[in-house]
Image 1: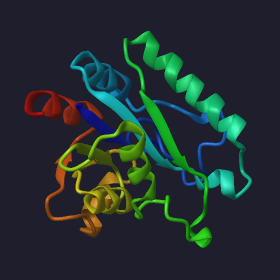
Image 2: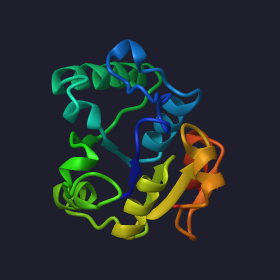
Image 3: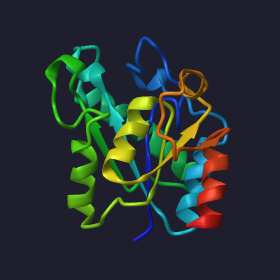
Image 4: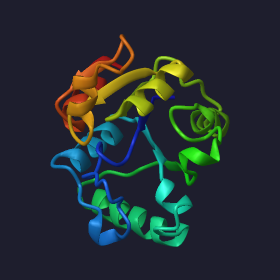
Amino acid sequence: MKIVILDRDGVINEDSANYIKNPNEWIPIPQSLEAIALLKQNNFYVIIATNQSGVGRGLYNVEVLNQIHNKMNKMLQDVGGSIDAIFFCPHTDEDNCNCRKPKIGMLEEIEKRFSSSLKKIPAIGDSARDLKAFKGIGAQPMLVKTGNGEKTILEKKYPKNTLIFENLFHAAEFIVANY
């Protein structure tokens, strides 16, 4: 089974310090939807693993989160792409849960649900917490320069074996050629 794990905000869509609180605020990063379509055309399972503490903070609820994901899925369908599963952590840092990245609980749940190890699979994020979680589960961390990516590079707080790409499309091209 060929699996790719993606963070959402800053990787697929523009991020916001004020959170993405409704479908109108969800704006795809150029070429990100086409990147997902490319992965799907090459028989990859595309799974999103995203922290969504805005739910835990009461900024939006799960129904609104589903509306945001419905918009994303509709836009993906328009370019021939799709997402196989979306896993999210609704908790805040203060909740100290096991599913919020950089902890690996959400990724362990993906392994269980798909009956597949995430060891060495490509996993793409834009922040240190994404990359630490990916390394923690044994996946291959990949950093995109979109979202918080440039800041993450400057802070040098990512695992040593992290591969760095301009954006999701460049990462997808690499994955298709090498996995």
